[in-house]
Every structure is written in C-alpha cells, then in structure tokens.
Length: 447
Image (tube, rainbow, N blue to C red; front, side, top):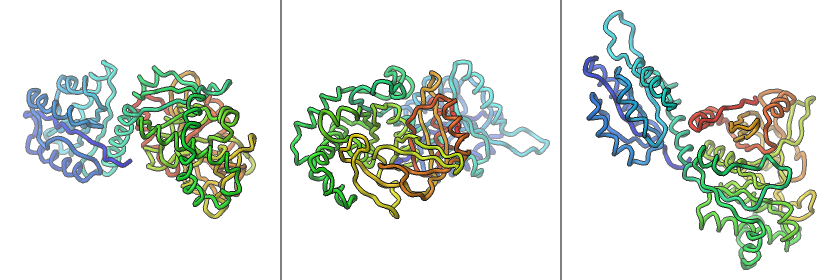
C-alpha cells in the first residue's frame, strides 16, 4: 500500500491508580508508536476524565483516520469508552498492558478496563479489536501494524468505485451480486453500463488509441507482429477505453462481460485489455465478476502487487499439484522469464489478443470473497507456485498447496466456492484475516 495507515490515539487512565507508572507506560508505548510505519494522530497525554477525553474527539474525527487506538493505560469504567466508540466512524482497537506480579499493589489493572468495555460494547453489537502486551513486545507491535493496514484496506473499500460492463453470462451464478449488500458490507459504489454501449464507445475512438499500448506490448511480446493486426489493435483500443474510463470517472476496478460480445460484436478478445488493466493495478474481472474484482482489490492492497483472477482447472492427486489458469490475463509481472512470454489467440474463439506465459515459482496467497452457501465469507489458501512448463495455452501456473491437491478440491466444493479465485504472490493471510474480521466476514481456510 502506498500511503501509511493513519492511527488516532486516545489514552485513558484514572488518578486512583499509580499515575507516575501509568505515565511511564504511556511514554514507552508512544515511542513505539512513533517508530511504526503509521501516521500518528493524537497526544501522549493521559485523559483522566470524560470531559478531557471528549474534547479530543472532534480533532480525531476530522483527521480522516483509518483506525482509532485506545490505550487503556489503567482501569476505567466502560461509560466513557462506550460514548467514544459508539459513533466513531472507523474501527477501534484497545491496547491493555500487563504488569509484574509483585504481591503488592495492582498498579494499572489495565486489562480489566478493556474487558469491562468490550462487554458493554458487545451488548450494542459493536466489535473492537484488542491487543495485550508491553510496549516492547514485538508480537503486539506487529499485530498492531497489520491491524492498521487492515483498517486502511477497509477504508479503501468505502472509497472504492467499481463499474460493471454488461451482465454475467447465463449460468454463471458465481458472478452475480447484490448491489445493496455490497454497499452495506463494503461501502463500495457500483455503476453499470450495457456491454454493447461500451463497445460502441470503443468503436468511436480513433484507431490511434491503440498506438501506445501496441508499443508497450511489442516490447513484451516478440511475436506481436504475427497476430492478426486488426483484431490485436481492437483489443488494445478496448484497453485504452477502459483505462480512460477508469481515470476519468475514478474507477478502482471494472468487471467486464468479456464473451461472447467482444468476439461477436467487435471481432477481438477482451482478455489482453484486461491483462493490461491488471498490470496497471486497476483489476478487471472477466465474465462481469464483481466479487472477482473486489477480491483482487483486497489481495492487491494487502500485497502491494497486481492480482490474477484465475480458475482452478486441473488437479493431479498423484503429482499432488493443481493448475490455476485463465485465458490470458495474468499480469506480466507474474511471468516466468525462463520460458516463453508472448502473444497468443483465444483457444476457443481463435482471435487475439491474449498474453501467454507460465507463472513464476514462489509463495502464493489465494483469496475470494465468496457467496457460497448463501452468505458472504472470505476464502483463504496458501501454497507454492512451482517451476513447470506452461500447462495450458494462455496464462497458467502449476502449484503445490499447503494441503494435498485432492483435499483442496474436496474442501473447495464442500464450501460452495466460486470458480474464480484471486491469486497474488507472497504470504498475506494474516493481514487478510484481519481485514475479514473488520468487515464482519467469516473466514474459510481451505489449506
């Protein structure tokens, strides 16, 4: 993610506890927070009463925070926390501090304050995240860093604007969605456009709109000149139209009905245009798959890398491997440069432009916001993309997952998973679990 997460801090305490020790603990925590990769908002000052704490709220609310962090430095009752959190516009975390078991005075009683507050909040169906540990506990610091990143991703969803071009193909129920549910759960704004209307917009563009992307692809694909040039340039005009629409209207992702319309009504494949958009980090899902776009955005924001909305197309229980594939829209950063990286035609419709390469070896994370079993959840899985020849034409990678291949197949089907899964390189499940928690999504772990 480009921008640091913005974290607002409110420190609570009571004068009936060991104030000098509480101030020392707060100073240590503040130094740790200053050293984290976050933008810090607030003051390292204990608020001992409701009046002083509530005076801090307007500035915190106006700061466009990603996360509110309450430092429960000593015990306080739940009334103030409830008043602060109830109407706060972003997720809240509470940090409590352990203390030495000396046989003497309980100097902070910090955790009990968090416990009391969380109970009161739960009675109003308000969920907060909790951390417990000393300021020098690296486990707590790492968890807080991830929590701040997760909260920033949640806010990005609320600011996201996604377009759907056309309806999903008949029988592709995996690609449908409820627009009101998306707005309620994620805050995403959705706009729609008929696919033939969009194609007419592309046709009306000057042919020169294909020139710049053609030059870009010519550097990537040594065989580009061997493709049908008319169809190839049409695909690249589609890309220019998508890119211009995203830039002009502020779309963070676009779901496109890619077939049959682009083949039958324009004479090219949309896949190559979607690949370029994915490389530009404006995910474009084929088959008008809205949740594919949202899943790719989540994976992209968590990893900082481009995502690939892919199908699981082959399972080999003997070799214990699986193949993730799609026609030709994987971002080129995923290519295994030891093998061919080239242009190709659609395997069924025989028209360009598609990318063709095997995926590079490396750790992968799979995620999907799923509607399986009639409820929104987040599917997560992990594995290793292995070095292997291209399994099928287009873009494909052979992987060994963290469970054996047939177990993965059985779990996938049992969970009612969609056929599309977003794939990114790296291990990002700990962060994605926190995103799911903040969004109120149960997590399905397939590996």
